[in-house]
Length: 169
Image 1: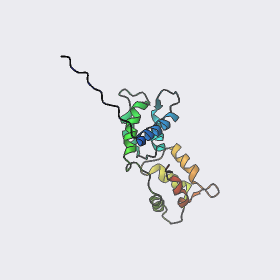
Image 2: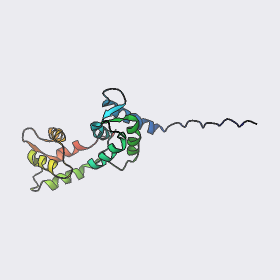
Image 3: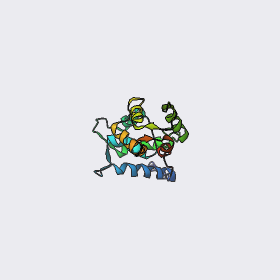
Image 4: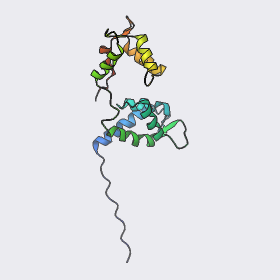
């Protein structure tokens, strides 16, 4: 007597929230996929991750990149490797979230030793490029363009802190 054909299980419908999340990942990745070949330059991974609302430290970002990097590094990351890692990261709602506004203001207040309510451009640039995880020149220019009052060349951090927050969709 012949063995019965194995019955394949019915494909499970994917959770709509997961489908939507994967769509956001694909959209963010596609913006940097200039060749339309499901790859992006490895240097863009941090920007993509941050555009999805995750703010890992540089060390954590390096670990993420190492996870999605090819066995033989090419300088590019394939979507097939990026999407599972990013899905897992986004599912963990508690990790990589931006700091709340009051904590950002308190951090600026620690730097404002004279309690003036502002930092000069030079002070901010000094702190951000020499302390902790130093900003790159490009990151510093981007921050200063948004933060510095062009008339007074200072950063009113209570006005700037809300701009640092991620808009929830």
